[in-house]
Length: 308
Image (cartoon, rainbow, N blue to C red):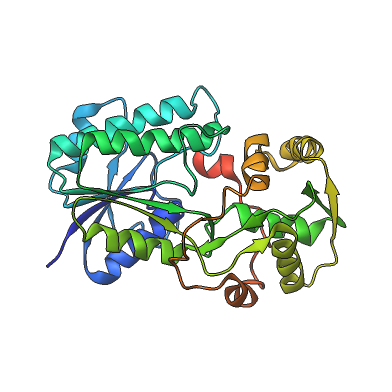
């Protein structure tokens, strides 16, 4: 039976992977987005678009009417231009309430590994608060918590690590590089989210891959696949953050934030539960090497450009 699914972020990254798999199943997909698709986006003609207007509750309800499920990927990576994590939580609350009023049967929400109300990092505290808001709004929901997501040309963080490795003689590593990361394939995350939409009641599941690397091992794997000779240089996290701030104006972007460095070195991108996704980063990487990091992926241009 054809299902009507509303997906936030269809024209971005994880939402795009979810939409592709839903379309492959034959589902009817609606993009709930703040801006139109970029010219030439492959899904632009495949999905209907409704405006994501948090300050217009009635419009939000109309946009969600008739939907069987809402897949929510909305969040912000860092505060900017008057938007912060508190406002992102408020926006999420408005979206969930609109879905409840519109009669949406189930909400699948993408969070992050190790989201916690007592986290020292505002990003992770905000993610935990959104999970709590969702539970208050409806008991029929699923939370998927991805770690460090890879795969697809829409990805930003790993692509830009590769971009730096291709161009710099030395790559600044915060701390000693022994802290761990657990990468997960975006297609596997999408598959978990779609499977969770078939369930009932509430559920929470980490989306994490089968391999755990130290950060040095992760960067070494990238460098070998790219055939780059960039040398890893270990520096205090505060110095790496300062270098990121210095490079930012050169690429007209925010390269990395102190919070992101703190979460990385605190191993918040590793699950304490068994792996849930099968795709190996090490096996995926050689096939991606010809294009990975060839172009810089600009966060501000993608997610902070003027909305229409």
